[in-house]
Image 1: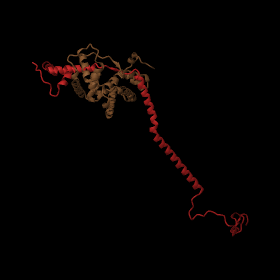
Image 2: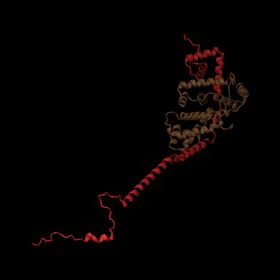
Image 3: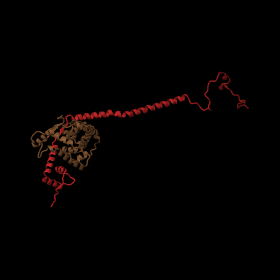
Image 4: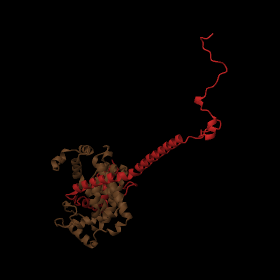
Length: 216
Length: 167
């Protein structure tokens, strides 16, 4: 049975799909992947910050999910469990890349800092202009990557993925209070890093979604 | 008359307070402190504004979409991994299988050896004790004449045979 349209995806809850995948129904796994692929993609990309690694790791997340789904007992929401797998694999990959000194070779595209500053200031001062885009994303991504891993993960889960604190605590295995204090510290650090590029009273145009790999 | 504190709690830094202020995660007193500070201190106002901008920038980051063939790629990887696991299984079982075969062969060899030993011992029985007679060997022709064959020998009795009917 092959289903791919939105209505049929919505017809099944996560739990129902998980149950069907466990029974070996292939289409249910396809639906689960389709439902979560973009969220996993974004999470991986924001935590890892390396486009060349993003797709591979996102695939690995779902392969791991398929392999270990039998162990999922439904103690937490399926999405929380999937995010936990994603975060753990990201951490492992970061360790692996760090050991291989990947961070030295893989610098984010080196637009001159003054150019970035000029672009962002212009965007902030004039929201009607179609600027921002890649430069701003590059800038924030770079400053995100400058944070240490633990702070970055919490910042991404909360301020980009908009997850509730309780879910973040479950995903990271941290106490609720620790999650909150780390988040505030991470925000503070990021604000200080972004300070040179910010102008008071600014607003920014939201970016349209784009398909991964467009910039490769 | 309510007294409003104008200083932050000692365990909380301004930045953390501002972050929680934006999240509306402060109690009434803490909120009052922050609002007083914001009225009185332009530097804290600027700090709050830059924090707000930073969060706004993050929330407006473009969301990426997975490639259109992502599901197919994942399923291919899943299939490949399943195959790999199946291929790897014999490698892990091999030593046990070999061990099993070796044990069976050893048992077979042992059995054959025992069988062979039994057969040879029944063909060549072990020498008996000294009290028993030595194995019979063919007698020389000269001595054979002196010895009457047992089967034809009639042993004379000391008494004549009498029948029960005789007086």
